[in-house]
Image (cartoon, rainbow, N blue to C red; front, side, top):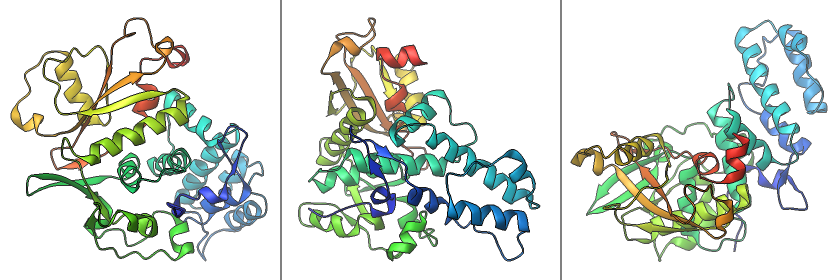
Length: 335
């Protein structure tokens, strides 16, 4: 088996005794490589000085006055966002615990790009040792928007940036550093080409079949199970199912905003028109291995997970809903 998702930066981090990701200076310096933060030639002395000091010591304390001294307003805002994010990461023992705290208590002004990068990293750690490339491809839904198309009766999801040709600049500076090619030829992952995923995983140029009853949704179920086990430390079983007809929704989790709205309609017994129903991409049944984690009103009942696409046929999965949306006791107490 080969490595995968080098652009996540996982090789720049240490691991603690429990397998969690621990921030390193090298990892923090990657953020300083972002084009928004590299001072342009016309940058003031305060901005250049702060940048150089952080390159030498990326953990150094940065005061409000240090940032206020920067002349350019956009640069000040960028530095405020970065330092707030960095300080949050440094307050926690692991990346996983820093992420869990963020999604439970609100991400505030932290850019969605930074949150997606954390998901990318944590997933890379959670999926370490997975040998089925389909699971890895399905897991890309956690942190990259997908464009969905119906082709010959199959529901095919491909990376939106890749097929849109808009990814002219890599999302991660590591992509440039590692020399990963920007151009891509999209294939649907299958038995014949699955092993090529290892060498092309950072190009995000393999589509996946998410048709009900096929392997794509089973692979996504596996990725979600491993994510929950890694981030929450709770063992669950997740099974892809074809329809929710006559199912008693004791608890459900929408895996994206549109799925949550559809789940609300089902919960309230509202009529769902055909156009809305066709936007449901995946349905899953989740069962807890240890029911003692579950709140009393749901104990013994399955939880249903819903994945949907938007009216313009995109999937924007929200993996944080699997962290904050399940009916488990310790999250209830922490909320």
